Length: 469
Ligand code: 5AD
Ligand code: SF4
Image (cartoon, rainbow, N blue to C red):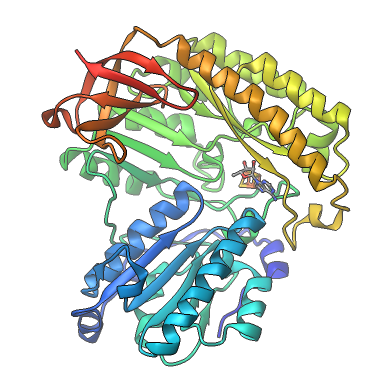
């Protein structure tokens, strides 16, 4: 049994990154395991998890399992989890409780926990105490071992080592969408913001080799993809661990040369954002003018406690530099409300910064202490009631700005990549502008997968409606 160990994750080694190319192997018997069986997979959290789930699905389908979205009829049930805030933990344990009922009548079902929660000691201890009936816990560093843990399904198999450093190339993937794809460029995070569990659950920064990234993108282009989103917890740190002076700006430039119509990247850390990156984005029309640039707080005092490595003024300087270089860009952010010791004055500074930046959108969160992080040692001393009131005040302003930004689009004709059918409105489609605004499009099925001109006819805070012209 390999359990995670937060302390071990904290003592980082500077080992060179090992790249394993062909670690994923299926035995003939694995291909029989899923025959006439169904799997249910629920994904929580960020795009990294969504991308991991695309690999989990491909592995399961290689094993001949069929997907179902009804867990009651599944033979294999997997939760791909997120550890960033406590609320997902509650949801996940709620789901596990339901699966337990199912297992009482159907002993043969296999239940597994994957993703970031699998990398948390507290979670694994809880499972060892209360949920020993689970079949497996598989961590974020060893997705390729999924066939192995399913094969050895009789008893609880915990396989979530905290030792990372490896990049597994050539794992299979079942892409969610045929036109836009997630491409990992860097795994892990070395920033250790004091509130954040990610450096522990995802390990140290490990950049993929540029050749592997470009090979993947060229394959996607051949398959007709119109857009790639480069993924990393901190994409701006790309290449810093590789010692060959090749960074995000160089990678973006090389990807731009492939002529893929749209390139995006997520998430940007202000501290690692260089002028060279802004230049490359400005000079290449296929790099989209959209930035997700989390600020977290508008108070330099709180930013310091958070270990964010920039002051409010430095954030504003970067923000204005981007806006000046790329005036049509849209910028969204993340904000945490109620970090330990946040006073009304600190919070007011966040409101002032939000008013100054007029973000196109913001994801706002109540601070949630994560065991094992430095901030969890601070007293969580902002009352929940105060946190909630602040969040509400902040959201009113955020929504007002998002609406204002969308209002400017009314009546305009803008290029939109039509990605999918709309879930909500029959006969409509869902697409995205270059600035990553979602548009409900009244159009034509033939336009799926194409970038078409859309006239914006209605706007809300978080979405637009339009018709193709
Ligand atoms: N509490 C609340 N929000 C958090 N985030 C990360 N850790 C925490 C936490 N402990 C938020 C940050 C980050 C986003 C992905 O989640 O805003 O940018
Ligand atoms: Fe967490 Fe900070 Fe890394 Fe983002 S940059 S993943 S908030 S530690």
